[in-house]
Image (cartoon, rainbow over all chains, first blue to last red):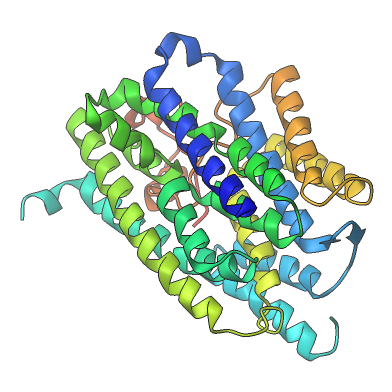
Length: 103
Length: 263
């Protein structure tokens, strides 16, 4: 139930951001610094989520099959593969490395 | 059919299919991260912003608390406010349309709209992409969630690796040039350094703070990092880059087209 509460609050706040853009006078938000922070934060959060999911195991750092997934996804993106192929490459690399015994 | 002759509608439909399809990966990862079917669906129906949704399940999957998941999802949603402002100036929706438009204001619908020059086309592009993605994203989230529940041990199928790949795939199109790469590296480093010292989920919020500080104190492009995961005009941009960049067509909103788009 607790998770439901945070989940619905996240939905509410997500919608609030979107609506804010439509309701606030353009002059107020047309501050280049605001959109710059929105942009740098998007990059920073996605980079952080990528690395956390690749190496964090609770509060420990682990180098396991997920590193292989990161590398495979990087190669797929380099080759301009579409998003779904990138995701499948990541899953395939992690599953394959586990089959080979690298957990 | 007349509507299908509109270039914005055609771009909107193809972007709907491309983006909607990867709802499968969100659905599968949602149910294997520890959320149940309806929690996964609630994110697609109500939060409806790919990055924020993946952030929420990414934090939960890593053992983070609900409040940390909410924090990461909310911070990642800030850019939708900037898109809302751009679209409000562009489309000027009135009455209930404003509230509906807000819900489908995401990277892809914004990019489809701002890539057009004619106001009627901008409107068609926005609504086609917005509604099209909303419908297909939710249908494919359900498909993925049902398939994911049937998989058994998610690790055996490499689904934790799929999550890593999904985040890199969301980040990749935003890494055009040296500055965004530097921001990404600094934030990734800050995250790794923080992991042993703070509870799961919190390192992501620390990285967000570092990124916001970089944005506040440094001067650079004001639209850095604001681009869609699937670029509706990728082919057009590639074409453009081989013939020299002519930005005249994209006169709106300061979103400059990028050459050689991601996917």
